[in-house]
Length: 375
Image (cartoon, rainbow, N blue to C red; front, side, top):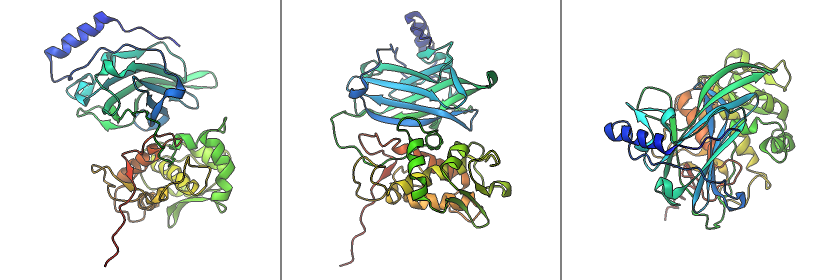
């Protein structure tokens, strides 16, 4: 893996350019890479999907911190590889290099080039960013990725860590991360996995292993998604592994996709991301009933948590309600929201408690306020 030191002269020129054009960015600080932190000291882990070509889930971006340092790790899956990575972190979205509202990865202060790897990471001091635990950070993660099949490179794509759109016209994204205080507080307890996580082959103690061990008990008749005549049934863990992750425009299932899946080569390829998000959320909601899925006992089931983000179209809906509506949209039945909105809501829930390692509960969801009993 080739790591290239950031040159001060280039930073100075970049900052000078920003000073001449305030519309391009805000206060973009020079960042210097530091040694990776001891994983035992890390806390506050959060992940987003790494999206290539606007709709292909090729892996994940994971962020974690200790009291002084924040680290951002890129990881690809399957036959996708990182060839370049670029990182910008700021205390305000305007601090990410951009022009006319479009991010400029070539001017991001941290970058690694000439890569051919499935894992890459950056660690920087919070003080260099002008932040400390508890201060929100805005992170843009850009990568160049390539696909290798049977020893041949068959395609390359631009990839971004999934999050909010920039105000410009391109599809670059940034996401928010809140560094934890690492005070040893109780973990949230809840656990979710992205569709890419649930689609992994079993290795070590990953989500794929949990899926293999518990699918039959959770879904003795198979996992059914969709509604009415347009529904699909995943008959076993192997079917999930083969089907996920899925990409493509959020939409209802096609008739050719509304069939039973057994994990064989005869299974059709599903061309909508909504399918993958619904399957992933269905797995987490069902497995939430198993004692070994979560770290600690939780006050209410995962399905009862409520979407807390006031800007979300699903604000105020429970996880169970989002899942039901997403299944309706996937099956072409009447749904309260569009397929695109429900896919986004399900994706954010799937990302809320990846691997159950969050030190504090995600701001995405909250425990519902009890309804007073009439006196």
